Amino acid sequence: MAAVIEEAAPPEADIPVATDVTFRVRRFLPEHDSEPHWQDYTVALFPTDRVLTALEKIKGELDGTLSFRRSCGHGICGSDAMRINGRNRLACKTLVKDLDTDKPITIEAIKGLDVEKDLIVDMEPFFAAYRQVLPFLIPEGHEPSRERLQSAEDRARFDDTTKCILCAACTTSCPVYWTDDQYFGPAAIVAAHRFIFDSRDSGFEQRLEVLNDKEGVWRCRTTFNCTDACPRGIEVTKAIQEVKRALIFRRV
Image (cartoon, rainbow, N blue to C red; front, side, top):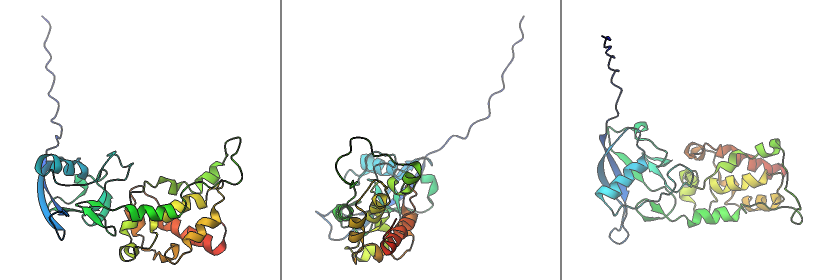
């Protein structure tokens, strides 16, 4: 008769447990409110849930009037930038476990742009500044008959600033931008940097003249808020300083 071998039960794995987390959201309903107000919501979340998950649960299960922007949910589109516990972040990239859940997590619209409703702001001034710096390749001469080749070294010169997703997190973290709505802001300067240092581009002087305006690159006060806020890890302040040097020496 064959012996029966009993396998030892595996040790219990750590099973994540959902806990109640309170979010304090700065609401603004233009059809009812003259000023924004705070409203609390409590939802059950796992530590690995994202703030975007919480907002979707609030909207889907507790309050369908809550309004916010979101699209890809993977940190690529940049549409869900907001202030989370006083810092500009993407809701889709911010995990609950990385926040202090012992007190309410505050959620509010990014600063420096007019709030249209709840967490939605008017992005037009931001994109107007972006358009002014000519954020596209300006080639020299006629359309080429073959691909414009570029060395790896030349490409590396502006690689960092190609990562921008136009989320406005850097611009709306800038204290200069909060008080001066004519300032181009960090994101527009980053967009200009991407082409100023592109060896295939011939719009160098045009962009530098735009940024040499009194509301251009010289308004930067080098506080590094923009660099800290960038969800893509772009060295925004470094890029701004490189554009300043290009203006002074008129060379890349």
